[in-house]
Image (cartoon, rainbow, N blue to C red; front, top):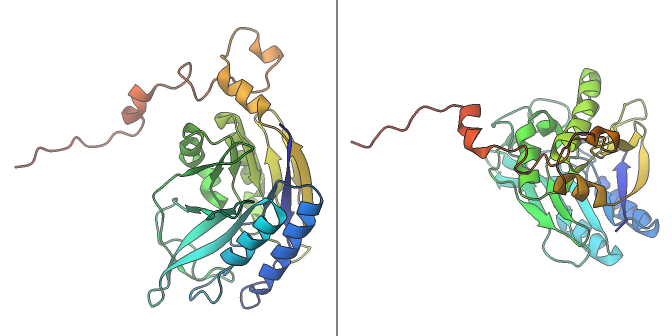
Length: 285
């Protein structure tokens, strides 16, 4: 079954003006829905807020827009924990077209605190989450992650092993010298997990270089460095085929990625402890 993803790479209002992003995001949801989108993906921390203390909550208006337009909306914000300590989770949220409570992923990697303080954009004390939830939709099972977690393959592997076929990994800002490796890893995460992987980022000016992509295991389906909205029609049948079949002699003639990577042909869970050896537990005295 084919469905449409809208990848929004906005010119974002910076911290101090970021509440204006909410109205922009709602308008973008409306436009994307009228273009037939089933999913609308915004960047990390868009529409904000970027800083603690949080002065607004974008989840209710975007959830309302998703329900009004009948689309899934993936977006970023922070989840305040302690106002005085300025602590917060970094969230990727997915609002549903039927108005149910939005799905939430709390960034798990790296350990906190990290770089969300002391720069021009974010200013909060990051607290890592601990869970890798996946979410069922009428189109397929969705996993959420974010930004430089693309450098930690365990994150998307955890989602894929839980059944995620479509993984949204919105990112923050211009990647500078990381751009080429970042782009490579977005596709790598699709290849090794036999999943569709979607990313986009904030631009603060047209001189910034963006990275909006949809990658499948066998090819990059959509890519843009410019501000704007890209639409791509996808289905999960090829992903499901690659997951359900086995790598065999001659498979490379018709498959652009190795088959069955999440199944018993390739997975050896009995070896997982040896991948990352840990000290033996000592008996209690």
